[in-house]
Amino acid sequence: MLPVAERGLDKKVGTSALTGSGSGWKMKKYKDSDWLRGNIQESEEIAETDKGLLLDYSRDLRLNGHSDARNYKLVIHMKKVAENSDVSLKKAGKEDVKDMVAWVLDRDLSSETVRDYKIAIRVFYKWLSNGVI
Image 1 (cartoon, rainbow, N blue to C red):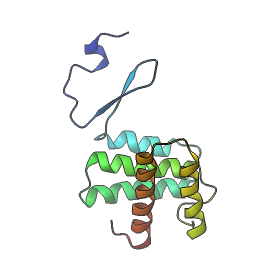
Image 2: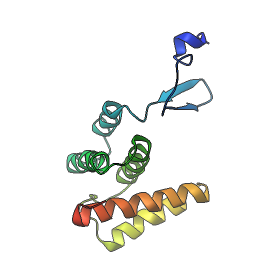
Image 3: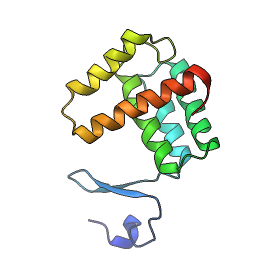
């Protein structure tokens, strides 16, 4: 294992979160909008129109004063929903949104994570319907 200094853990973390995944630690930087943008753009499971929509959504969240951590959480949840949906986020109707929520409920997630997904879906479609967050 790398020394602490080489892993970047000796510096102040700020709004970053350390997450473990068995074989080691990696740092997710909430303030790194380039990482978030790249993560969306590199997804092979999201249609190009939905990628643009998610990027616009992230930008608008920032412009409306949401914290970097909140932006990250809302956008990453919607990215996962988009990757697992059979319909475009923009073209989804009421039944499609219900299917998205059903997909969340079918996963082995804690009740708090399910709640977070439901909030992310609601906030996203509120934004999409009138551009207000």
